[in-house]
Length: 364
Image (tube, rainbow, N blue to C red; front, side):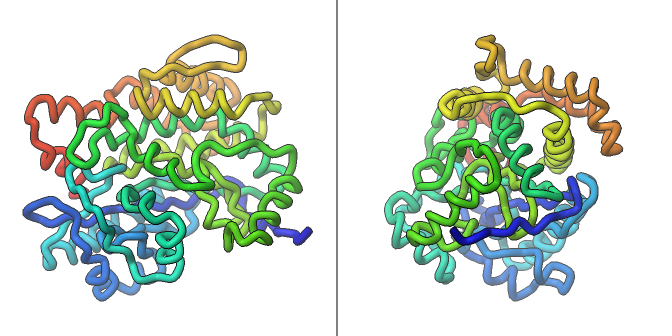
């Protein structure tokens, strides 16, 4: 078996990737103008703005950061620069899981071998892949610690999905699912909630089989809701919808950083993948009000599970150890607010105007 080294990182350092959509300034429909962004990139963003599957999308990638604020400040600065180009070229940035009203049967795919190969493999499944997500990386100093965190955090994925859900509309319809993006993503292989591993060797063995069979070319072809990234030495959270609320993004990053540390303090807990997937469904469907099935057979809400988690982390001084105390009460406050998707649904019930839903996701 070929060894797949884990390139260790400084513990709990951070990185963030925000996928954003380009929408026409007047119609608010997606526009394939990403090439204009790359033609006008300032030097400080040359390595931080990446192409995505569609010409109407780009990805903002932060450098390695120490704090949630540092990561969000970079995203803000990058967004301001991209908006300057948009002002001249007639587009705006939109950060939401889906676009609510455009029904495109054929995608305007970026001319890149990786994306063209993906379209050849997935065909019609990829025609609906008009989605944007938020990814968060946390660094780990060893293979054993990253696997421990990976196994632990899988249980809590529904909390992150519920707090970021921003995609209840698609192809002009109210889907009645608060994160419809998550359901679109699940249609292609190597996505969704992953299985747990006994150790890094098991992960390494699985990855080696997929590589040798040519099912994948690299770890980038694994798109689980959370994945170990050996090249970066990180654990990457991938379940979140893209959102334009920078305060909420900062809180999600802080929660993930704290949970990464907390995973090293707590004993492993046995769980089942089908239970994890059921909890994810409740989160995608109902956001914070969805049910959460505990390992002890208690049935509570995702919101209640999140409150329990925050209280337990407080007891173990997790936020204090990372100098994140200011985020504790803000996270409790966030759990009392309506989800982004719920606010979108209420706006549509008032206005019946899907353009207003797009506007809610615009980065100003």
